[in-house]
Image 1 (spheres, rainbow, N blue to C red):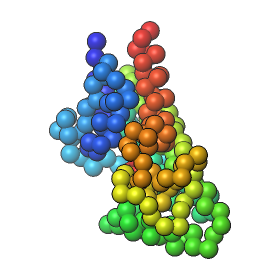
Image 2: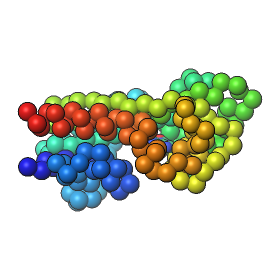
Image 3: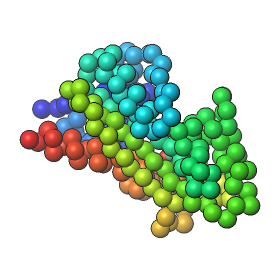
Image 4: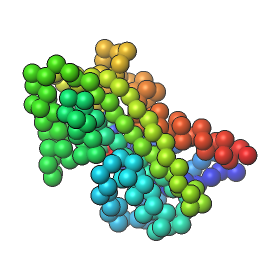
Length: 196
Ligand code: IMP
């Protein structure tokens, strides 16, 4: 039996990535698939809070088993910023490049470049919520490198590698990334919960 799960996103790249990780026993539907056009509130001050808020919103609206994610880049020398503000760090209407520009400026002359990406998935099954966290540690470079990926990928080099995320083929990044790790945990839980 195939289990339907709604992913509170319209990002087809993320949808495909998760579908691959969860496998053919699960059918992942986007908000578009359900004809949902409402803006989902995302007003919490933590990644956990935002993931939960988005998943609960969709569960209340549809009554369907669903999940939502939220990700942030946490830079040690910036006390964890941009964190929950990663998407809009350089202000309303900013793009990925503006955000990178801002963190590089803030880190200018600072030796400690340690950072991590954290991703939280909030899954709601029959009204019960479960969270899964994935994390990848690394450092922020001083210059951009690579053309793949998105967001802060050109300036993030994961520990154990010399390439930035934007220089890696997707299979390599997905295998070690925050989102890949959180999704794998969720997949493991779902597969064992449904196997019972
Ligand atoms: P979201 O919660 O997945 O939408 O992520 C929020 C923001 O974090 C994005 O707009 C990106 O700036 C950044 N981000 C999330 N995942 C990644 C990634 O895998 N690489 C680089 N930046 C990311």
